[in-house]
Length: 95
Image (cartoon, rainbow, N blue to C red; front, side, top):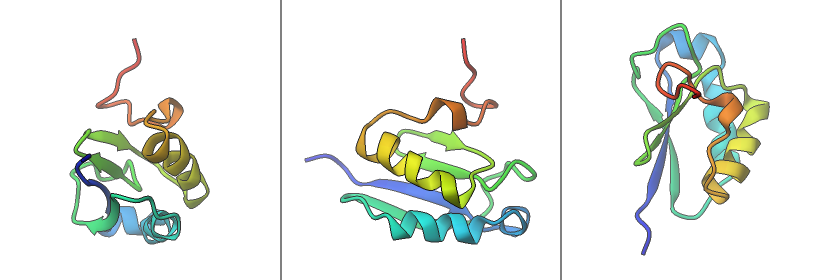
């Protein structure tokens, strides 16, 4: 059986000011079996948010807007392929 995955959506001050509450609500509005979307404390990337971290893969997305969440849900969480155009380049540099 596949282990559960977690979508952490930073809810600290900087990310909240950039709309993180709506991003979290969007993930929770599109549930995926075995995936839990939860609020997190600061993910240490202030000013680049809203930040989203998917575990256990450790895939980071930054500057996520609520209308982009469905792409992450469909392509990454359901399809298994991270959305390359949305990846946080600090941790996912393109070759």
